[in-house]
Length: 130
Image (cartoon, rainbow, N blue to C red):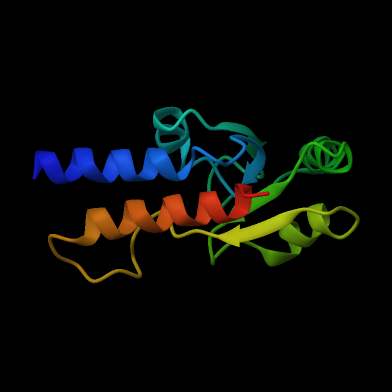
């Protein structure tokens, strides 16, 4: 099991070798450990919890990031408010991707962890690719 986890980690790491590792927002604060492990630098999260809505000041702050030209990608989960996603993408060339942080869409069992990490990595890599 440990060797499979190491192999997966190396596979994910190599997938980030040709991508920029910054300039993205996440829907909420669910990916901090993933970002730290693979040296990704988030511009922030729209909310700090998936059930919370950002206030007006937070939206203004994030819109400034979006209009600065430095934001390239927004990763949200399928349950996120898609209207919030549009706030950041309507006037900018910002890619979007959907990512499932909980693994609830995967078959329970011994492969769930591997499927979840591969899915998260794939969403990040797709969104951050040039």
